[in-house]
Length: 230
Image (tube, rainbow, N blue to C red; front, side, top):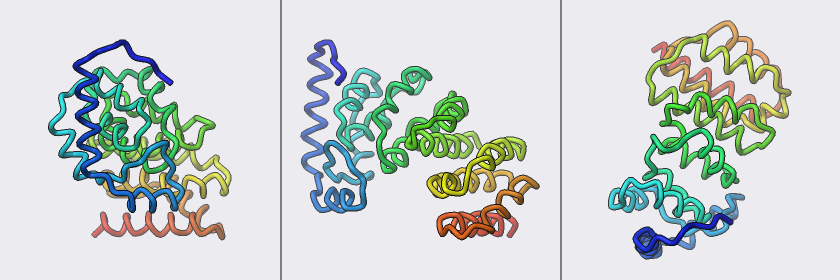
């Protein structure tokens, strides 16, 4: 648990956020997420559109964002990602924050608002992709994918660097991260609008597998290639 110095203004803002979240809480959504294995310490089941509305009413503030993040509530953590000043999110602070990431929902919800938008996103992605912690590997993939999307610039060489890394993974490891891998590669393809020898080699490797997750990934990548070629 993280302890904070008393700050009445920030405490007031946090209390205000909690009141707004309770107005939009959805127990059924929270229950369905739990049944799908998406576990949070607390989950109000509030939808992203409502969270965006709340975020728009909040100041861009590191102090507030930090308080919200460390409450370990799904909605406050997503709100923190929405309002934190990007220039204050150093690699060290990001490393501290991501210790709280423990499920795919949080990976998918925080990367487009925060981690994928940071100037340090490529460096963070490299650190997390080399991690032994599964959620950090997923986070590394999504951070890299969103970084490519927001930068709107990449090269085949950059795509090959990623593919070369995952080519060394065993099939069961690839299957574990199949969804995240597919996300990154499709973001690369959308910009480069082509395959590469290394990507072709990767597709061939996955095609020879009998693991459903990998065959789905192959189909998704091929569909993306067909789309950009058309």
